[in-house]
Length: 65
Image 1 (tube, rainbow, N blue to C red):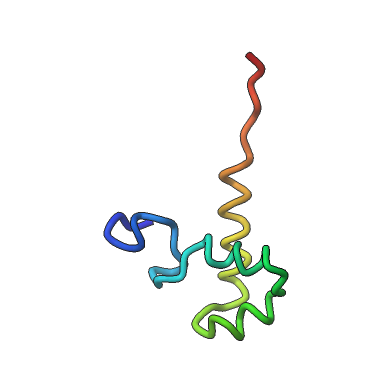
Image 2 (cartoon, rainbow, N blue to C red):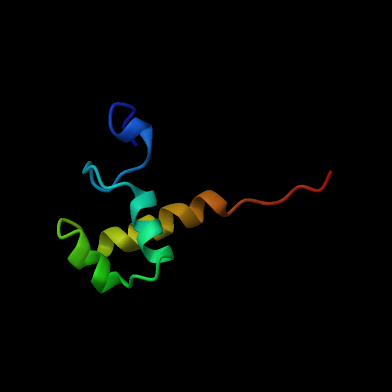
């Protein structure tokens, strides 16, 4: 994340491709190959890294009140 790029949102390898951009494409039903065609600067590992990043952000315990 760079506070001076894309409003501080997490991006892939310093490019202006945000993690959320990849997630939105996956959510619309595109597969990895289609995303790579849509965003030719990406590599397969970038998509996997985006998924790992998001997964790590949601991997926390739920504390009951």
